[in-house]
Length: 439
Ligand SMILES: Cc1ncc(COP(=O)(O)O)c(C=O)c1O
Image 1 (cartoon, rainbow, N blue to C red):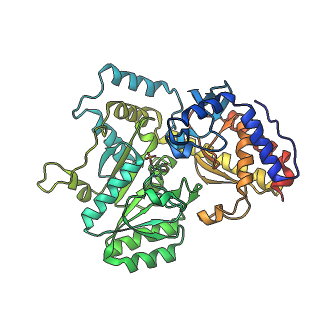
Image 2: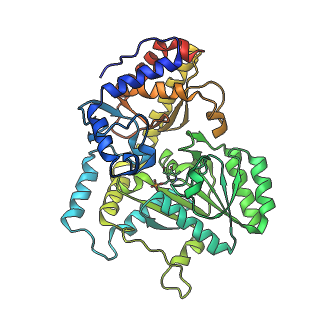
Image 3: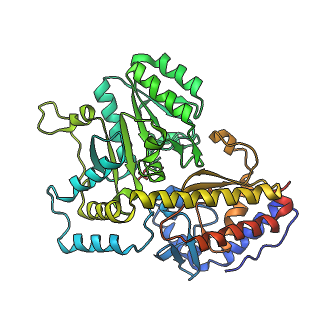
């Protein structure tokens, strides 16, 4: 593929041209989408993957590369929304999964790997004294909230506008809330310590938990400020509400997640994504006195079910990944690479005076076609969505696969040379559409 869009003084025309080039290059994806739409609503079974006019259908991946059904090759910058940290064919992970398959799946028993994976997590994340596994990050948050209400005997849960904790725990506005689980929700403003502290105190002994992402991931890679997260920690201690850090995405941002980096140790932590070596996974854990409510030896034990909670493929891949591949040193190196990339991308925007910046931390970034500080989802919403579309189609045309909303999650096999190429491509896009990005 090569970029076919020319400089254009009008944004709508430029987007239409870029979209036209996207469609013209993907007849097979289009046909597959039309067939899929006959049996799946909108041809889709995972909302985040859908975009207009139709999503690109990928056929295979290897390392940090993807090939779509037309045979176009891409650098995979999306990294399965952070779950794909190991890339598509890490030999160590592959060997672990092969080994598990050799011993048979669905054993319906305790296995030797789940305590190993639990131990690896406990060694990393300061808040974890006990952990339990689930099938997804969503389920981990559902269980953590259920546990918090059971432990405290309280009903209310505080979350933040723009937060995302799973398909039934979404607080970004729009129709998302219609499928949310019916918790008694108190919605507070992200990165606003003063208001949040006041709201926690007002809720007092009604508030069971505060659930927060240390960085809004789906909400645009907007880091939680240290003072904000520290204030949540201190105030929940005062009122007896549990602080739950959703580190489903952010745990990869350092050897001990954001909690270690910030010194904010929550009562409970939720995890997911890469911790199962790329297989379906979630986990929740924290203080032993809270988590031990699940100890089945207790007469008052809470149940925690799930056919696939300890499925052998996830457990084996997770152990191999954390013990042999994504070691603390590798985590530091990957996140340093992401920091360098963000700095270079931001320098491009600044040098051109363009409406373009990259937010995030370490290996997680979101490209925003706008100037000015981004501290809240409302700030990010000021970007012109047409420029977002133009950036997306133009990067796809140059062989860079990322989220439609501009999110990038670096995986381990991505090289510096490939990131040089990305920086060049972004510079080229900003130059080609200079008038539109500097308007
Ligand atoms: C912060 C956060 N929490 C929870 C989830 C839900 O995880 P899953 O998609 O595995 O259910 C996500 C997924 O993107 C997430 O980003």
